[in-house]
Length: 108
Image 1 (tube, rainbow, N blue to C red):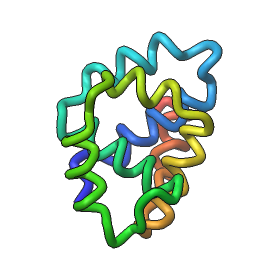
Image 2 (cartoon, rainbow, N blue to C red):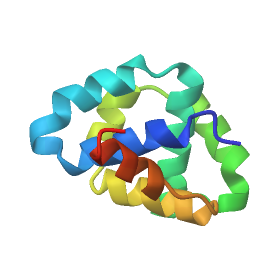
Image 3 (cartoon, one colour):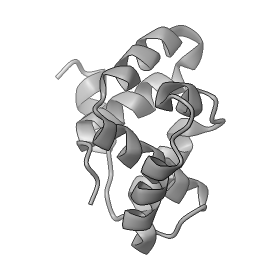
Image 4 (tube, rainbow, N blue to C red):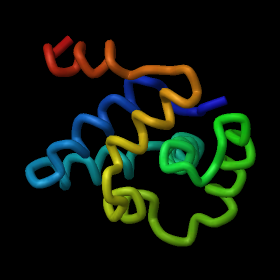
């Protein structure tokens, strides 16, 4: 089970799409997440990238916690196609951030 809300994932997706202007804001947002949220986000990205299967979510989260040697913000900001990987990970888990993204875009 993911230990991060879909709304927070939607924030990361939207900011990572605008990385050239939102990198500082995204870094600050990622740094404010607690450890469980950060490891869930990394695990979700790995699932979306194909490093883990959806049914391996618990293992991906465990691995993300065990292998965290770089600050999560640095690691995620250095990941090409971060927003795509997060969206693919959500899709693989049968989830979507589309409604939350729309709400955030509309300022809701």
